[in-house]
Image 1 (cartoon, rainbow, N blue to C red):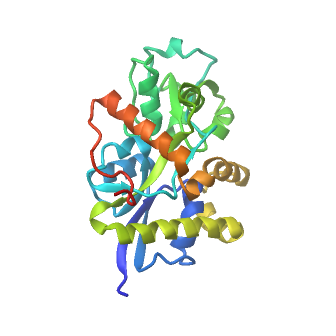
Image 2: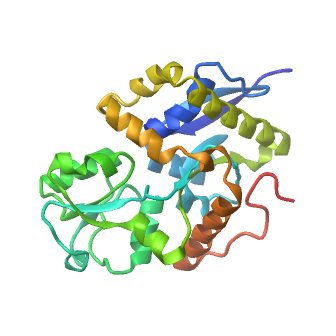
Image 3: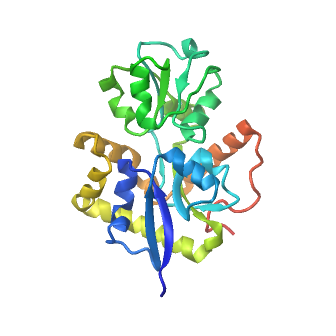
Amino acid sequence: MTERVLTLGYSPCPNDTFIFAAIADGRVAAGGERPAPFLADVEVLNRKARGGELDVTKISCHALLHCLDRYWMLRAGGALGRGCGPLIVAREPVSIDALSDKSIAIPGRLTTAHLLLQLLGSHHGRRPELPFEQIMPAVAAGRVAAGLVIHEGRFTYRAHGLHLVMDLGAWWEARTGLPLPLGCIVIRRELGREVAARVEAAIRASLLAARAAPLEAWPYIRAHAQELEDTVIQRHIDTFVNDYSLDLGTDGERALRAVLATAADQERIALPDGAIFWDET
């Protein structure tokens, strides 16, 4: 079988590198496809997917709304769960209402975090975009009034001297009763269902390999999380990698469709009539 080279996008965050380590180092074959990893900030991946630039990539579930014309969603490799949502943080203890006309730094317009801030509906101030790792330093320095933090920011904001204003993930869960879909893996539709099935199986196998032998994955994870302590890395993995990452399942699919429908309504975009998942007919 001739190997096909597939560009494979994901972030350098520990949950993604944990899931993809065995593919990246060759311990798990991609079934006739040779992956060419491209690691970047999630908003960079969102924009590349919107332009159809990557074959397979992790994106924000919010961004999925804007690229369903080119991509199917896979059922493995995503980030979805409870107690894992984005946080609004500030330098001083303050209410969310007090921030209504203040600046809140966001990690990207297409992130699920930004969608939740839009849905909250109480913020009408500036929303400067910053790479996620720059948001907490900007808040601590007073360059913005507050920040919308994702990833390991859940565990490290106190170390920056910041205070929690609101947990938007908890707000979503209370509002909907559903887990929060943060990120998902998509594949170009033109590659076909057979390739999609093989890639999904490879991602699932890579995750299982990391669970079975985490020490083998650790050097790859560590190399891309150079500024994080080992305890933070492990908390990150424990929080964002779960059974939904192996298979979205019924609850996960309900949550994903709820996010898409909510985003479509918020942005006045019609959902496509065709399949969202590669295995839908």
